[in-house]
Image (cartoon, rainbow, N blue to C red; front, side, top):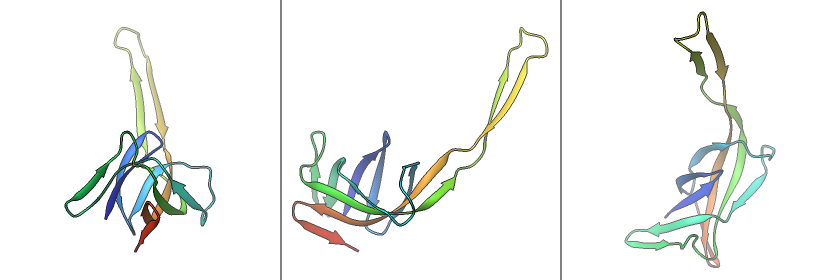
Length: 111
């Protein structure tokens, strides 16, 4: 069974037991989170597509921790201006989630 969820403006295709990196959430490690923005749920040939969300569908996950992403370099350069060069680095922080259960209606599917 899989689900497509929306979290932080991004969409993720998840299964029970998956680990995903999402934008930082204000939760501590070990806390549980319930995601109700489930856009699609499927198992085999049967697929439920939400308009915009699947009613009574939930995804339960556990926060494993917070990590920093890869460093990106922001380099600004203006060819018309003499000696205009600006270099800046950035590392995005992410929250790592483990998907524990996908629930549609009253029946949870656990891994």
